[in-house]
Length: 215
Image 1: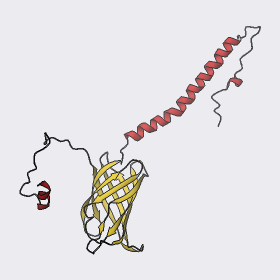
Image 2: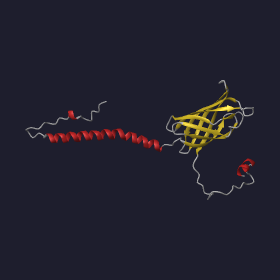
Image 3: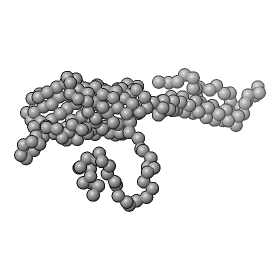
Image 4: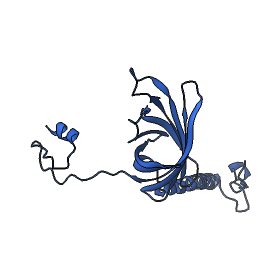
């Protein structure tokens, strides 16, 4: 669309060189050059200002990218459990949780996420299910979860989601809803290990499995 506030050089009525005090050609060329330069500056400013304003607004808004520790509860009485989510730049995610080794056991969940509002994100992820109590650990189906995350601050969010478990033929085995809240994981400073080497000393409450790792 033509911008009527910017006149082209052909639309500028500048008199030719002649009598009656009219401007010489050199003055006309200078005037046209200044008008063209001014038009370019106006166009550049008009196009750049909104984009820079949006960029500043986006960078100041809370972001989902990063690693999060979530506490998740399932409607229906299942005890809450802890899950770890990583939301990657580009819209992919990974999730693990402390129930994965229960029967049926689940693989790490892989999925996608996208922004749907100023502080809301939709996600979908899937994992495969196996019967670890049977010989050969046969596959028994898959688990699929989709939901919405609402950022409540720079480092906190709440979520609601629906899970569906399928058998290997695609039939629904179970379905339900979950709700959770999460905090962003951050780098913890190392203050109590001044140098490499040495040994870890277990205390009286250290589980036997961890004690074997320390030997």
